[in-house]
Length: 223
Image (cartoon, rainbow, N blue to C red):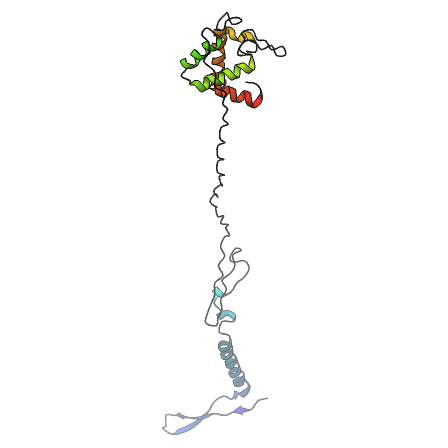
């Protein structure tokens, strides 16, 4: 067993004389146990002040206390960082439409010019004389009359009863069929004037002028 310590201290008595009083013996082993426990508590507090029950509840994570959100990360050595999670999103840049290159318009082709030999002054009372007057009445010049003379000379020779055996075209303007000239008069089969009026109306509607019809005839063989 451990050693006993006898502690003697003076006490006062009623007679005024000093006497000695002896305390109960204290075991050394009890004293050493208490001393070691106190030292251990001090060491734990100094080495890890946040361990055990003294640790702050804000730095402990038990289970999924943040409902799936990452916990805050803390560095004790004088600095800390926060981990922040944001919802992702996509930014789509809208490009401006690129201008479509426009090819330059081709230069207009020069109109092919067809001229006819100058026609002689027609004899009065003839089909050509009637045509000459009809051309002047429409404001056309001598060139248009010359084109008309060349055109119908090629088509019918200026004969009222000229008939194309293969197509059936008839008269001075070679109407196909000949009965179309009935819109100009009932005597379309024998009257040169009726045929010429119908023929000029057809030329204006299709080609604009006798020279336009003559150019078409020269290019394709018909008008």
